[in-house]
Image (cartoon, helix red, strand yellow):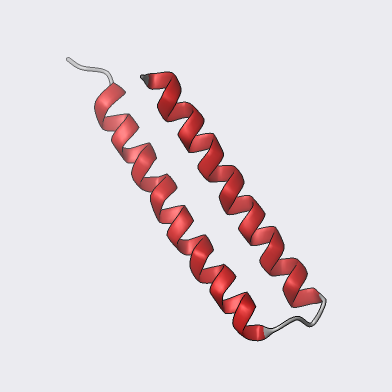
Amino acid sequence: MQGAYNILIFIGLAVVAFILGWGIVNMFRGGDPNMSQKLMRARVIAQAIVVLLIVIAMYVFGTRS
């Protein structure tokens, strides 16, 4: 189960990096500002999901005393 969380976290991080890169490329090429806003909103949502997955994994698989 821990391996599944690790895979989900790494996939989520890759999605965040992809969205960020796409947004930066769009901005530097002078693309549609609305598209940049949508991409940055999607990045924030993806980041929140990844942080939530990390917190859940830390809670579930953390050391127990």
